[in-house]
Length: 425
Ligand code: ATP
Ligand code: MG
Image (cartoon, rainbow, N blue to C red; front, side, top):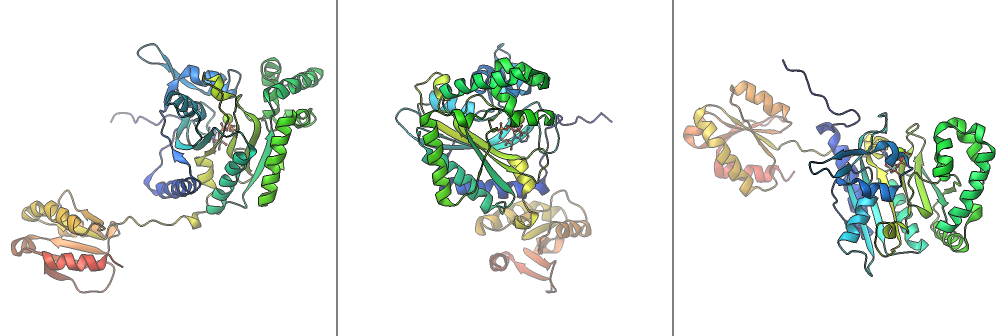
């Protein structure tokens, strides 16, 4: 036998018995986003590499080491999208969505990052992303946060997650802060790990984002950006907090929350849980007012977030997922050649006349006994049987598989009545 070809490491199949969990998650998210007035946008999975380099930032984990980049047949450098914001902004600019307009958008789909696969961290994973364009105030920041909070509530997760929030200020205030930070880390250079040493020159804020436990104490004692905010960013942040306070949502201000991507400014936030070990962030976002301009358009304020569906899915309590029953109402057993010819047209006719009917037709022949076994396994409560005798007489037998009702034989017209009545319950 030929050797099995396996899936790519970190890229998983989602099998039929897991899909009801995913459908539940996706349906809840879609419903909620629609209720807040957000529209879906569908974007390509592949973009030009340059788009991610220019938006996410050259000195970030994603661009430095996680992108799936390849040359296509024309020699262009393309990348499987590691996140959705860059593509969404690209599409909004390209399709003229940003001129004197506001947009509340969302997308859902796979993202790709070459990371070390482990629980909650995969190379193909799925995100729902939300991006809003054309609104500069803290009210929309609050709306995004409140919308995500409601989502956790809808899915019974409110007690499992908590909100961390911070402000990264304006570009100018980050520049002033950056100097202080470089001073501080330079004075403590001997404590920096290899990654942080490299970032000291290129992107010192990202040192604060380090996941290395050995760096924690040093990072905790570092100067805090929140103390260097410019007046406008400070007012924006205070107003956001006031709205959140007024709605009674609790949060923690985390001065070390800088996010891993370069395009953020002002508000940033993360929803975290302690139920998933090290991979505890289920949703992360922030304001990126500079990105649209950075990608070549007139500046437009923007904010968004993305949530990781694998992490959310593993938080869901099995008990709240409705067990959707897709098992058929009836299984059509066809014994003998004549019956086999009659089977498909009969099934199609029943489907025409009873649109809600879930009917599975036995394919592949076999004995009556083996077909009944399949009928039983399908979960259907009824077996509709056409064997030689029925085929000859133009009848169909109905066998009740899960109750003690006598088998009966009836003409097609009666069968239609019987099924129509039966599926009402
Ligand atoms: P982390 O710090 O866990 O690496 P990140 O900051 O790289 O996360 P974002 O780019 O903000 O993550 O992505 C938003 C969300 O997408 C994350 O909070 C997480 O839930 C999910 N996510 C990110 N990378 C992965 C991955 N490799 N596998 C599964 N989910 C992921
Ligand atoms: Mg990451």
